[in-house]
Amino acid sequence: MQGTWSNAWRLTLTAAVALAAGACAPPDGGPGEEAGSLAQALCPAGQVCSPPPTPTPAPPPGSSVTLSQDDLVTYLGNALRLAEISIDSTGSAPPRYYPTSVTNPVWAQCQRDLAACNLEPFAARAACRADVRESCAGVPTSITTMVAAYSYVTFSDLAKSKGAKDRFFSIGTIQVDGFSAKINYINTYVTNNLAMGFSTPLSATQPSVWLYLTGITSNSPTIDIDNFPDITLFGMNAGVSLDGLRPSADGQRIEFASANGFFGFSSWDANNVPDFLVGDMGGTVRTTASGMVSSAFGDASVRGAISQVLTEMFAAKVVSVHPAGYSQINGVVGDGASIRVYYYSK
Image 1 (cartoon, rainbow, N blue to C red):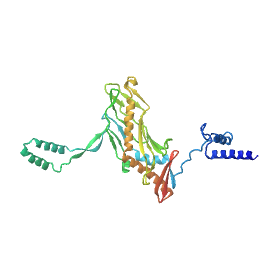
Image 2: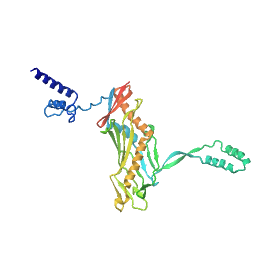
Image 3: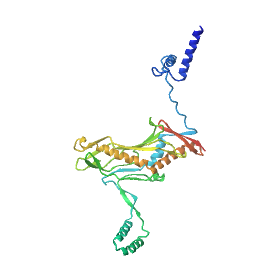
Image 4: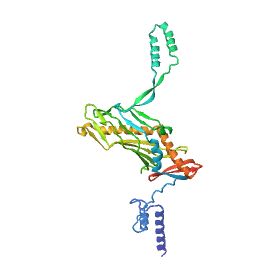
């Protein structure tokens, strides 16, 4: 009898240890196989013992407020309204001018005159250089001039008041499979054609803001191919994902880690010839335009402006709960189609 009780006690202890270790189903032949079998035998009927799931991380400390899609539309939608997008390499888009620094032609002439002094008789060279330096004294090496751009993303006065700066691009001729082509003024204004919201991708730990723009048009044809039938794109759309919403390093603002833009279309047609004859011209345009959108929204000034808008949206919600405002933002967490922002109040 004593041996029987001893064996029973040993069996029970072994099973308890196995359960405590989460070893309900070890690999075949593994050191816990016997214990795992015993622990499985003790599971409720119809259930399978397995290691517990990874616990959900604790929320950041402090109070929190929820920011909804409607809040985003009210604040960020208003700031982005009247932005203009143009993608063009034909020169048919309305030009937008921006300042750029170029070499001062007067200074360049001074350098040529100095070099020419070396052609003078040796005895006259020093006097020649002195004369040139005197006449060129104070001439700046560069000057600012206005340059026309046909591809750009420009912003409204409201967005500019937050710090956003217009972005200008130079898009040249596209080369695909031996064909040369130009983009024929793909364009839109942001009005009621911009949708937006919050999301948390399955592979991400931080939420994102997504922007989706429709109502994009072009001159006809959309892609002008040299010495070959042209291409028309239909159902054009664009957007950007502002990924990794998070507090700034000082805890005073909401910022995002990266901007990933895209450009797409529902279909395309090569005029009067089979589509396959022109290669992946539409895909090349997609890549070019997507890179332009990413660059525009990844620009430091635009990132800063969007960060300010998100922070203002958050601060307005905080004041409705804590009139004195917040002292620090502790975390940004996805909450379905909304986000929760955690903070310490003043």
